[in-house]
Amino acid sequence: MPTAVRILDDGAWISVDDERVVSVSELWRLTDHDVCNCTTADFLIEGFVEVDVTETTILARAAGQCVTCGASAVSGWLPVGRIVGPDRRFAPLSSGDVRTPQRRRRQ
Image (tube, helix red, strand yellow):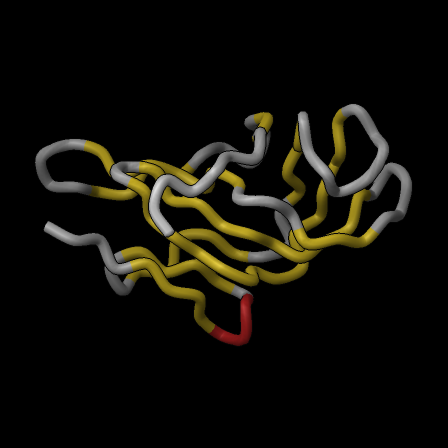
């Protein structure tokens, strides 16, 4: 069963199966990233640029700013949550989870 993943409201929301599940204004901690020179970036999400689903992981590229150093950038593909269980429900990552960019598995 396919999972529908879209960006809504000019980049303000990620929708999974027609339900708004992740919004901007969250602060994500990033490691091993290319957003700025900080070892761990505290990245304030200002807008979603692209979304994708790879097997069971929802990924997004987001525009934002590191609140530590002030650098603005568009992130690599970051995990947002997973599709879990036989009913294929969305399970979000906590805003406090450390995120590491991933490669998309399909092109």
